Length: 217
Image 1: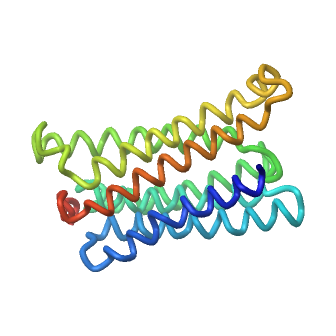
Image 2: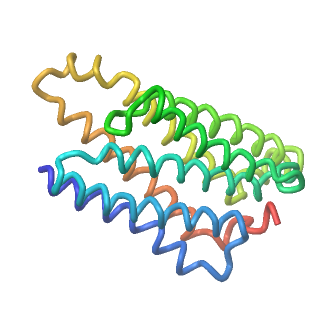
C-alpha cells in the first residue's frame, strides 16, 4: 500500500505541471510562476520519495522545500495583486519567508520534525493574501465575473489545501492516538488532499483559455 501511495502522489503531482507546460505560451506571468511552483512540488515529491526509501526519513526535505514553496507563492501573489506588483511586496515577503524558515529550524523546530510553527505561518499568510486578491478581484471584476478568473480558482484550491494540511499536522499526535492501529489513515488523508488539489489545478489549466488568463498583468 505504501508504494502504491507513492506512485499515486507522484502521478497527481506531475499531472497539473504537465498540463500547465502545454498551456505555457498562453499563461500570464502569475500563472507561469504557479506552473514553476507545481514543477518544484513534483521535484520535491521525487526527492522526498527517494529519501523516505533510502533513509526512512524525509521531513528535512519537506521542511526546507516548504520555505522555497512559500517564496514562490509570495512571488505568485506579487504579480497577481496590483499594489503588491507596484511596491514589490511579494518579493519582500518571499525573502522574509525563507529567513523565518531558517530561524525556525535553527532555534525552534529542527528539520527532522514537522515544522508546525512554519506551517501555521504559511497557512495564515496564504489565507490573508488570498483575501487581498479576492477583494481586488471583486472591486475590479464584480461578483459574477470573479468566478471566471483563473486566479480565483488557483487561490481557492491553494487556500483549502493549506488549511487542510495545517489541521492534519497540528492535530497529528491527537489523531494518531485516536486512530491507534489505523495511523496509516492519516497518510491516506494527506494523499487524498494532495490528489484533489492537484486535480483542481489540472482542471484550471485545462480550461485556462476559457477563463480570464490576463488578470494581474
